[in-house]
Length: 136
Image (cartoon, rainbow, N blue to C red; front, side, top):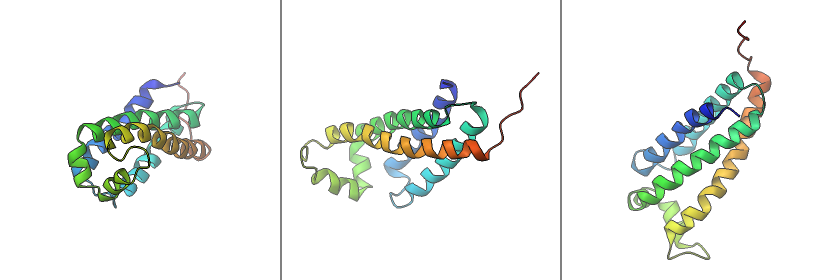
């Protein structure tokens, strides 16, 4: 596993974690993520020799740590700019009065879900992108 690449690519998750608090509207956020996923898949396919899916999956798991932490720490500002999340929190069947705890529980589940997607992107990119030539 190339943990250096994983943590370097997870910086995009950290940037998005902070940017989605108040800068990036929730309707535009998926477009940003699509570009990040494509770029990450390209980098992983170019730099990593094997286990492309696993590398992409791990990037998303690290991203979910950044994103969940930022959204919990800055919950008030985040919720003010994300009405659908506020509605989802209020309608949560088990924790409607504890939205931060609900985020703490749901964050890793989203991380796993998006990890499967990014892993698939990386797996597909590994067939499309040419690897770096080996240095002799």
